[in-house]
Length: 256
Image (cartoon, rainbow, N blue to C red; front, side):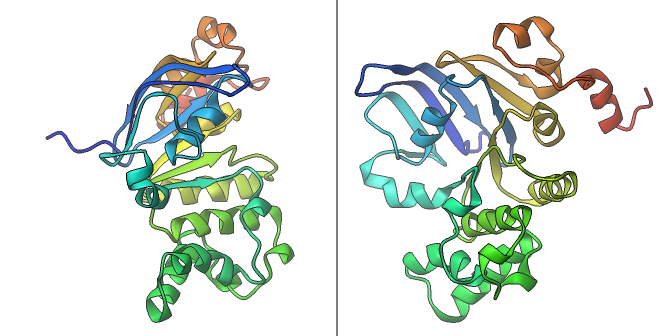
C-alpha cells in the first residue's frame, strides 16, 4: 500500500542570481495527512525551500513533486491550488472589504460562482471558527482572528498541503491554543515553518531540521528537541524551563 505522498523533494539545490547558494541537495517526503515541522536557524534556507513548493521559485537542480505532480510550468495552476501558503502576516493575505470576499477571492478567481462559491466560503470559515464574522471588515478583527481568516482563505481552495509560516507568532496564549486546535482538526497535510519549538512539538509528530541548505535531521519532534548536541550544532534553543522529555510525557497522559 504505497499511497502517493503529498510532497516529495529530491536533490533540491538552488542558488540566487547573486551567487548565494541557499539549498544544497534537499531530500524528504511527507505522507498524506502528516503534520511536519520545518525547523532551523535564520538563513538555513527554509523560506527558499517553501517558495519551491508552489513554484514561486524554480530553475534550481532536483525535483519537487506535489501529490504526484512535478512542480513546473505544465502543472503550475494545479500545484498552486494544491499548496496553500499562510504567510506570517495575515495582512499580506487580507485585502478585500469583508471577510467573506477575502475567502471567496481564490475560488472565484478559479471560476467558481453562485451557491457553490458561497458553500465553499461558509465551509472554510466554519473550519476555523469564523463563520459568524463573514460580513466584518478584516481590519476590525483581532490579530488572532485575522490569522484564522488567512488560514480560511487558503482552505477555501481545498489544498492538499497547508504550509504555515510562523503560525504562532504574535498570538496571545488563548489564540495560540485555538489555532492549534484548528490545525489538529483539519484533514490536510501540514508543513509548519517555525521558531516556536514547543508549538512544533505540540502540533507536529515529526520534524525536519534544515541547516546550511541541507536536511540535518529528520525524526520524531520530541526526540530531536531532546538531543542537546543536535540542537546546539544547529543553533536551535528551547525556551527557558521547557523540557521536551517531560512535555512529551504530559502530552501522552503519563504522569511525570
